[in-house]
Length: 135
Length: 135
Length: 135
Image (cartoon, rainbow over all chains, first blue to last red; front, side, top):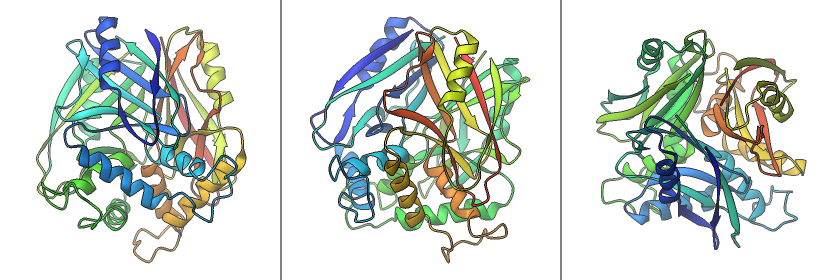
């Protein structure tokens, strides 16, 4: 089963999509298998991160802002604004595709793991993910 | 086939799990397929690295220690200690899931490739991985 | 279906392999499924990046050259030259495996996404990728 989901983002940040992905796995009725998630953009990415204390996600974003900063004078790919090039680098450093085993009909995530779409552009937009659930 | 393995770590570092994963692939009896590996934590991660000279892994760890250092004064997520927040960032920069093709009944790894669980916490613990082998 | 492809690289840089991977998916005749790509090396890696403006890829490479530089005096794994250790770190920071959903018999990539093999060694060589296409 392959489905597309659209994730509205309002700006930079980690947007949890665990529930949307888990619902597709439930619908597919697969007991044992793999759920593959891909974001169809190069200025947003995926990561599995702690789903409890939001300060962990804020510190993660802050590290990226400092190490892949907007306005780096070395950047030449700036036509779309100062947040464009950092977004491609941040995507390369994190993940565009994830493969999550399914066990007992559910995503086999650890207790503290959530699936996040990471928006790297300031303005945000409708971000598309393609999700495959296979048995 | 989905299996869970537990990897005991005694502290920071790269722990090779190639043999454990290869054994599961052998047991599954799959000739052609994909082996999916996921670590069920956000303070440990996965990487495929050189399995020959250990100095490559030491330099890799050293780079991380310098670029995602403990005690970074920007971190606010510090309740669990100075090694907590760096561990989440290091996990985001490496991999939480890997998908390795199976060919001729074996993991199709290159000659110098090993699969490693990277423990990012000082004290280590029992780390769980979920492994799916599909045909 | 599992196939190996060989990608000749002449030196550092991002080499697009989208067409080779797409051709294998077409040959496999899979309508819905997943295409798994793995590079069999630890000094080259994979990334999904913007396939339009080449300046985005140049800036990405430049960021890596500056943040994981050759000649870092901390490196001890230097027997194979100054570009050896940076190549392993750059591989760890990007991807060794990718899982791309297949929809309607084609890779479900976004409009601006291309699949790239990233050569991290100066001299380049024949780089092998293993590709699984499953339904």
